[in-house]
Length: 345
Ligand code: KG4
Ligand code: ZN
Image (cartoon, rainbow, N blue to C red; front, side):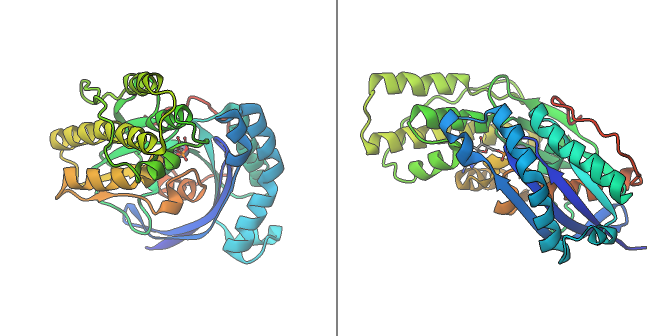
């Protein structure tokens, strides 16, 4: 029998305070017809810009200030009321328990524990990376087995999911995450944090992308330290690049960074033969990545999240919670713990 489940989800793993209401049908081992009723994200990016990255103490304090207004707004937009009685129309609460900055995670997790206690609603803890994975399952389920490339500021992972809620890490980065490499490259080029979108934007103006070597590694490892050093060397040779030269450097960096992602994903797809390939995380908004990966894997379908679901948000945590409910019945609990280094598999 079909049953529509509606959840309030909370996400505070890094520098975005987020809350969302999502619902979907539990239907023959899958969640279908997923609807995002609200998706509120209060970003602290502007605050961290002057530090050139996320300042953990500041992030935690900002989450404390923003969490209740963010939840209220998500309830108001998603349920038409932020009255506590509106919570009774929900089936469960969900929150990111890790991985992430411990001070940031704690704000979301303890708020969720308290809300669960006061509302007597079931509560489920979600892995942030599972959220990025399921961000591509909106509005409809995709066919398993799924090969996922998860690319964010903290992670670069190739993940194999043979069945819903089962994850196996095929490969990961040896040093920086790809988003982090974009952020560091942007800093070298004098662009503000977060740098991924800045690099992509600047690269548009390139006439002749600077050639950078692509680090070739065993299946399915990633590494960005060599590329970062190559960019730094290039900058040392030309400490005052013209706008055109900066654009060429940004485009060359982007090309080499994305090429490694595309090559390793193509190798994993040809060895493992997935039914579907998905890409999630902040870097998955990158247009070059979308085009290059879709071309390289054609005719295999590659699914990318809606742009609003690429960066950190709570809607993806809600979607992951709906899928989690297929594995384990939702239960009342107020004892979730935050885990900074939580693994997906
Ligand atoms: O998933 P996300 O929002 O946060 C984490 O879980 O880390 O990912 C943020 C990362 C940042 O490193 C940011 O620079 C990168 O995603 N990013 C991009 C683009 N937009 C954001 N990287 C490349 N191209 C973009 N357009
Ligand atoms: Zn993320």
